Image (cartoon, rainbow, N blue to C red; front, side, top):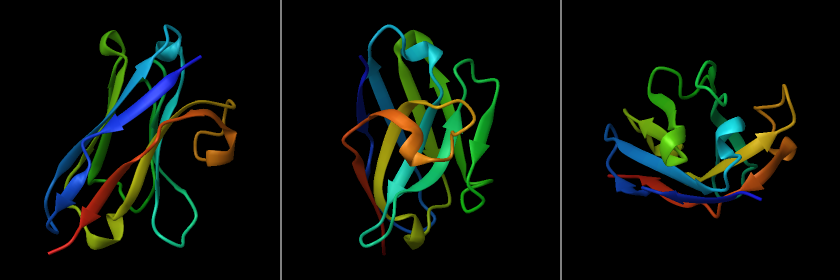
Length: 124
């Protein structure tokens, strides 16, 4: 069993930065791929970024490449999402998730564990 708790969301002006954290309980967390997703009002949940269990592979949505960086510290059972150059279209609730079906890191329907989400609002 894995429980995920996101933090670090907030209100930021366009061009600003935020760092989200996803802290996990459960000793098997370090063996799972972890993904970040976001959901804007009235829209479907969409893939943002994912990282393999040993940080050997990272994946990004085209819309965030070059601006967002995903990383993890397995000793702290935590995955991070550094978000720079934020735009109003980045606004939404950000969720972390873990333990996807192999090869399906981009698909929210294939993840087994989810956090409760943290709100990110980019507005002037």
